[in-house]
Length: 574
Image (cartoon, rainbow, N blue to C red; front, side):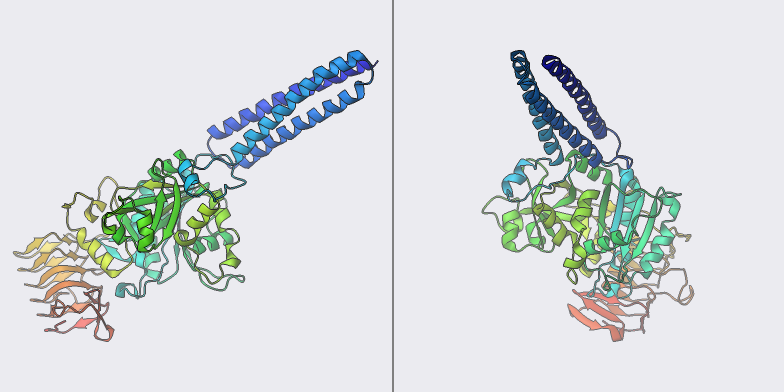
């Protein structure tokens, strides 16, 4: 009877082991299929890992069951002992399989860090619960455009948000990230605002109707204003804090839509053209948790930027410093030792990121109380924290034109650079932003073309639609916005006229916006400004800073800005 019992038990154990082997193979096949198939919300990667872990536990339980069966039957006879020995061999093999399967699950749950990053920062732990990487599709990306920063030193932003500033006579700064999204097939876009947002919101609503991004919940562009809740009575403090607050309230996930697999974080205050599909390809190819778009910059110009330390053999980011000192720039520079710092290059953060949904939720979770009253920014806080926690952070090298707009001088120079179609250095300039294969979208205007009355002189300038130019006018390295009227014999040099909303807005077509014989140089003229005849506005004294708002103008960094609503009588000299 003992022999029969042993044989029966052995058969049962073998049958169980066979069934578990088939289940383990099925789980493995399911996991392989999960890696290949398109990401969906019906079955998460965490579920696949749970199934694999269950297989390992079940196989271990089967081994324990066989051990107890052997122990009961070993005292029956010598032949039982012989069969026990055979079963012990099978049990050890099953235990070994269990150990191997658990080891494979551990490797799947915690992907290894790049060698360069591990060597440079060995103290950074790997995320404990990181699932297997699954590629992200562009249709499952949600773009977030950050458009709410304050700007107290720019006279043009006293009544408008910085992303609403004009560029190239026709566009606004916000048009560039939104047009990049359209050209890259990004269909789900949120624009986060906070300061002076009225004109910005009006522009977005007029320029980007719902059908541009999709209908019936397939796509949208929503403007989300900063909010307060019973738990958080203050305003957003920092770019990441703005995103966190809207995620908490659910404003970024409209009803009836699936949660995104990744987030595309964009600045609304920078000039560049980028195909975000290339950025996503880098993210997927490197199996990254976070991908940062980066550009090369001279170290001497990078003290106000975020600087990445990138591995020499791959794109892994192993260090990050926001607004570094000269000593930190030297440490992170790409030049050879002994070269002057200003001749070295560094890898600068563009403020353009892709976050996996897991990375975003993990890094922003619990920040509402601990960061109360303190700024929470992606560059200054979130990226360094991601590196400390061991998330895989990679760099996407961008080689096109990129210019952040933080000051009046940067905005002024970028606009005038757009009038120069060729660059002496060979590096793409601002004029490269105007490209007909990847157009920049904005508000469509039904205006007549510009009209030139008599002989004029113009060089390296942009003159918008609806403009009327009198005889003898000279326009050099300047931008004339829509619906402006230039009087006879006036002269513009390195001057930007923002333009009017409609033709003959102020006083009809009979009187010009810039009076006859007036001379403007190195200045900005806001909308709704009247300049009389024979005015001289050149800042000949070279004043760098002057607040003359009570007299209708403001001088910042040597640039004279004529404020909106101002009137300058004939013969005015500034």
